[in-house]
Each structure stands twice: as C-alpha cells, then as structure tokens.
Length: 112
Image 1: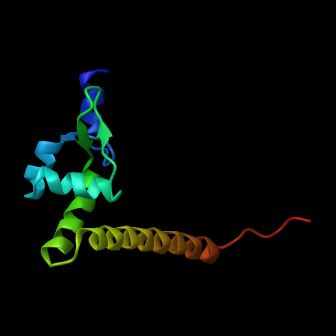
Image 2: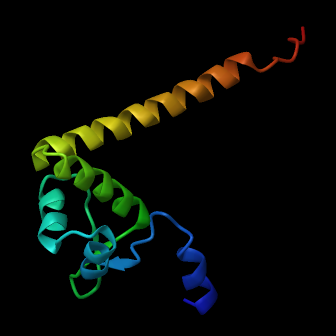
C-alpha cells in the first residue's frame, strides 16, 4: 500500500482509522461505553492484526448518537435499539425516494 492509498482511505467513512482510545476521546466517553455498545451489537469495530478495536467515522457518528440518548437518560440497550431503528428508517426513506425518482422519470416509448 502506498502513502496515496492510505490518504485516500481516510476519506472513506467506513475505513477503520481510529483506535478505541482515540475514538473514546473524540466522543468524550469511556472505552467501556464503546465496549458496551459493541456488546449490544450497535457497532462492530474491525480488529487490527494485533486484535485491537478500530472504528470508522460512520461508527463514531452512530456511537455519538447512542451517547446522546444515554446522556438524556435512556438505558444503553434501548438507546442502541433506537439508533438501529433510526438507521433503518433513514435507509427505507432513501430507497423510497429513489423509487419515486425512478417512477417519475420519463420513460422512452416502446418500440413495436
């Protein structure tokens, strides 16, 4: 892998660029919180060759949303379920919008 490949990957939301310690610092939370949301299967960090957890920017956004709910008093298991449902709803809305665009697009006339 070249240095250019590494820099290009940093733009990838799914690239596991952050260690557990760095992720916890960025979120202002503990490593235990990250372990707990992993155990609740909200996020599944990738593992480095040495077995250390690595988090992507997308996973950090998901964890930040869960932390927001927990900070508001929601139990961690419920917060994880809410975040999963919010994510599923967003994806369903994206798919529906795509279907609407496709249905609204003019269709070429059929050839006999």
